[in-house]
Length: 130
Image (cartoon, rainbow, N blue to C red):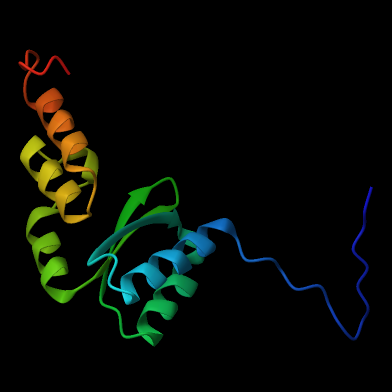
């Protein structure tokens, strides 16, 4: 078994949690123009870190409590966030099939998969057999 030794002069640095590594990747993609809107779900204990990081970089965001000590963090272009404010007025699991479809499309999810998901949620007998 390996052990990491620390000395009083150099305490062991806490490794960045995987949630925060994912956030950093989302921010990178947003800044590079890969995404216009991001939805990131994470543990509430990292809220200060996440929001501070976005604020330092001048990125607009919306926070939505999920429950179970988790948060949904939407961030991106102001016009996208304005649409989110109009569409996401309740918990995500309570969105209508149409609202869910629009959100998925805005987030850049595979449009074919979004169409299948919409049909599944909207009707029990779609011609696609999904």
